[in-house]
Length: 221
Image 1 (cartoon, rainbow, N blue to C red):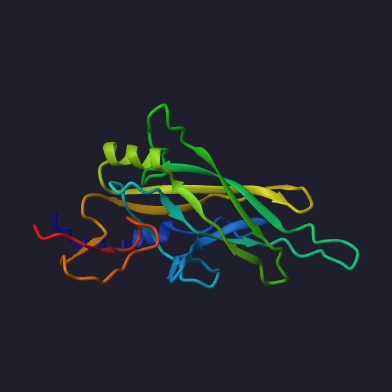
Image 2 (cartoon, rainbow, N blue to C red):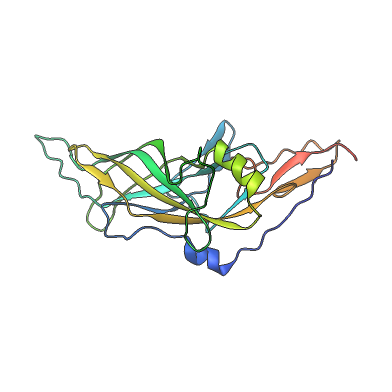
C-alpha cells in the first residue's frame, strides 16, 4: 500500500501549552530535546534543538518517547574534604494523560492514570546563574497506553503531564513540578513518506511514528 506524507499544522495553542515547571523548583524540565541520528544510532545533548509540540501516530506499535532537558538549580557544595551533595539522580516519573482541558483521560481500569515509570538520569549541581543540565529519556506513552489510544481515541490533541522524582547525593528526596507537553494524535499513513520500490534512500526519525516524518521504501500498488 502506498503511504502519503501528512503535514500537521503547528497550532499556536500547542506552543503556548508546552513549557517547563516553575523555575524556582530545585529540579525542573526545561523542554524536549530532538534526538540526532548518528552513524551508530541516535544521540541527545543539552545543546540540541528543542521541539515545541509533539506528533504521534498511535497506529505504529512504538511507545511515545520524550527526551527531557533537566535543570538542577541546587548549587555545588563540593570542597577539598567532601563530595558535592547536590547532584541529583532522577529515578522515575509520574505521568498523567490529559485531554486538552487538562482533565485526566478516562482509560480502562487496567491502565492507571496517572502512572509511574522508572527513569535514570544524573544531573550535576549548578553554579550561580547556570543550572546543571542533562538530558534523559522517558516512555511517556508506553505500549499498552498507545494501544488503547489507537483503539478508543478520536484523533486530536492530548496533554502529557510529567513530574519527575529522585534523590540528591546528600540523600534528600526531590520532585519537580508538573511539565506539560501537548501531543497531536494521528493514525494510518501519518508521518510517513513513500519512496518508489527502486529508491534506496533511507531516511528515518530516531523514534518511528513520532514527531518527524519517516521515509520508507514502498512497493508499487
